[in-house]
Length: 459
Image (cartoon, rainbow, N blue to C red; front, side):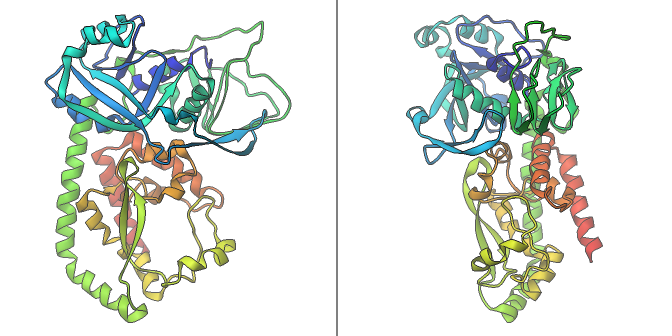
C-alpha cells in the first residue's frame, strides 16, 4: 500500500482525476458526487488509456452502454522493464514474454448510474450478460490502445505504480492529505525525508519511510508505507469527490465530455484550414528553397524520417534537407560533441549542416513541408515533438502519454527549453507531460505566438 491506499484505489483515484468513476464487478457501488461517466471493469483488473479516443462516441451515443476493447501497445509482444537493486539503483533491463497470452481487455463505458450499480452487483461474466448486455450498442466497439494490469500479480502492480508515478505529476490534486514535499516528490503532508535518502523525481513516498542507510530513489520510483509499530497517520489520505477536482484541460467548464470534444474539433478544423492556406501562400517560397538546396548540395530536396503519430502509428515526417547526404553515417564519429542528455543529438556548429541548411534552421524554414503532415492528420501545429520509436523507448511511461495526442510542428518544450547541460531531456519530458495535461485552444495560440516571436527575434 501507498498512503494507506491499495493499487486499485490509486487507479480509481487517477480516473477520478479525469472525471470518470470506476466500477468493478462484484463490488460495493456508491455513486460519487459529480460523476457523469462510469468505467465498468472486471474484478481484479485495472486499465489505463487515453479517454480522448472514445470521448466523442460517449458524447453522441444514444445507447446506455458503449463497449470498449483495450489492447496492449507492445507491438513486438514482449515487455521491457528497468531492473533495480534493493536500494533503487538501476542494474539492467529485463525482457518478459509471459504476459503475451492476454493482450486485450474488454470493458464498458456508461453514463447511467443505474447500469453501473447493476454491474457492481454482478458476480461473474455470466451474470453480467443477464444484467447489462442488452444495453450495449451492437454496431460500435471502440478498439483502444493502452495498458491493462492483473492485480493478482505483484509484478503487474509494481509495473502499474511506476507508470503512474511517471505520468501523474500532481496526485495531490485528487488525493486529500498528499502534498509536494519537494520538487517532484509526493508524500503525506508533513513528511520529512530522512537524511541519507536522495530522491530524484518523480518519486512517491509512503508513510513511515525507513532510514536504511544511504539510498537513492531514481524516479519514476515509489516507496510503500512502512511497517512501524507506532505509526501515526496524521491525516487520512482519500480521493476528493469528482465535483471538487479541477479536471485538467483548457476551458473553465467543469463537464468533461463537451469541453474535450469541442477543443479537439476546433483544433483539427483550424489545423486543416491554416495548413492549406499556408501551402498556397508559401508555394513560391517552396520553389525558391528547392532551387537553392539543389544548387548548394544537389538532391534530394526533402528528408523524410519515420516518426510516431498518435497511438504509436508510424508516418514519414517531411522536412527540407538541411544536412549533408552522408549525415547519418557521421553521427558516431561526432558523438563526443553531442551536448544532449537524452536520445536526441545536439551539436553546436554541427559540421553535418550545409550553409543553406543553417539558414533554413535559423528561421525554421526546413519545417514548412510538415504542413502536408498536418493536412494528412499525422501532425498538428502544436503538440509534442514527433519522435521515432527508438527515442520513445527511453521513458515508456512518458511515451504513452505523449503518444495520446498528435505531435506538433512546435510545442511547449520547443518554446521553453533552456538547452542547459544535462537538463534538456528532463525538460522534454516535463513540458510534454504539462502540455498533454493542460492543452487548450488558447494555450496553443500562445505557443504559436511565442514560436513566431522567437523566429522574428532570431532574425
